[in-house]
Amino acid sequence: MIARKSSGVAVEDFAMALGLLLRRMRADAPTELQEFSWTQKMVLSRLEKDGPATAADLARAEGVKPQSMGTALGLLEKMRLVERKAHPTDGRQINIKLTARGITLRRNTKAATHAWLSRAIAELDRQEQTTLFKAGELFKRMAEKS
Image (cartoon, rainbow, N blue to C red; front, side):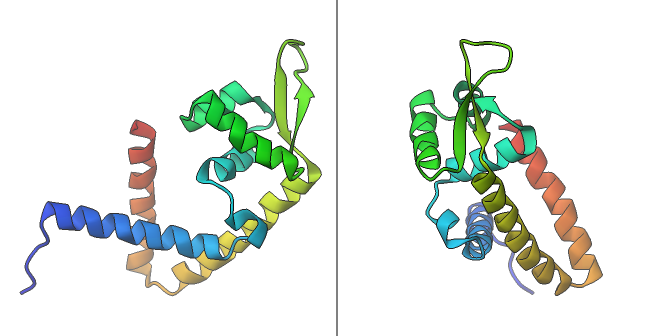
């Protein structure tokens, strides 16, 4: 009989497994995107999903300081992935939006990531797939609580 792992070891193993999975998923991303910070990747994703937003809104949504968001946006803007546009109803605010180049990069990244993940999941049996998808629901719930 295999001894059960202590809580600390189980948490450490779980964190390591998540890290390995994220690194593997990033490895299939376009080379250009592999050098981005997690915040920059999440900004691109959020802008694609939710549309234009102010830098302050993005900072709040990602839980980072406005100065950190400014740095993240600066690189994305320099690479012509995002651009600043006047807010449509409030002239005092500036919205950040994806450029055509940013949209293309997001689509290519998403396609590569989903292709790899689909292949990896297809190698699991039905019971493992069911367990994995249930775990995904738990991950989301855990992340939303923090």
